[in-house]
Image (cartoon, rainbow over all chains, first blue to last red; front, side, top):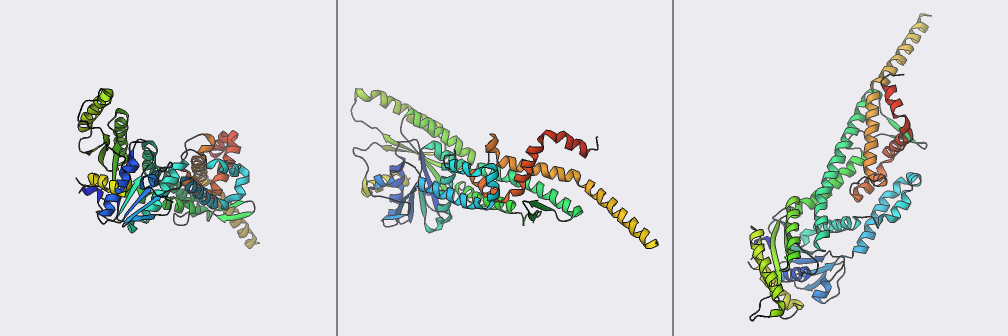
Length: 330
Length: 93
């Protein structure tokens, strides 16, 4: 059994990444099915806005985990609903400062917020965080991810957000430091706006901005800690034996390395093996051979698993378990 | 009579002292306002085209930012007289 797929310290998180159409969903469904069969309480979540996890299992899924078999639960995140919920949450938070909204027309800005770049990534990250927060309910959580580009950006977010939070905390500290200095000489400083008077917070514990910054930092750090811990997270890349998926996997490896996320296995899916020579697909076979050669030399230190192209589509729990068994048995 | 003189003198000294006090924190206050302005500007960066921090963070901080936004707005209004402010601070007339 491949150790990096089994729970070691609490629950195990497995991200299955890869270019569109290489078989991520099938592979992740197969891994989840095989792990569940071996007695691990497994949840598989599709983060892909274009869901097809339900199609692989041949059942309709929703954002609530649905029991498919003993120990096997599956859900599909409804991205649109998530983004709406996320914005609603933000909007409620914003309701407090409405005196100011009219001044800078934030209200209008808010309407377009749902179209603002990056909102999908933030919502996805928020969704991952919520699932990880309740991670102890499961032994293993398998994430079927959107195509590489979006996934990598989501996985990069915790690190980037931490940098932002740290910088802002630094500036905030300087502000509070100055406020304390002034208060020492001048006494408590008051700020009057539109007839309302309030005392300027000067201690870190009483400053709502600082408190919010620290809370945010903690939340993000939690996700970052989980996804960078080799005892908790593994990433599996799925690719086809073709040049473009190969390049993409290579780039993904670089990015994951930069963010410190453990990358453990490359699954080369749909490898064609023929007994006899078929001249019509000789070009494809040549390309395949070349890629397979290069993979071994390029991905040193990472396990590589070749899955042949099956004579029929791997659908249904039986097939998935067989396929998953190939992945989780070393 | 003597009492009156003492009162006057102490009032004078108090005023004198508070003027000094005021002056002593002038730089720090200026610095504080600048930092608050920068803080608000970074968070509101999207409005002026500089990359902004994670949307979540911005929107979560916003409700507590009344003072900083006010400072930022004042700063923008007084922008044509920045040199005047600095000159005043350094006693250049």
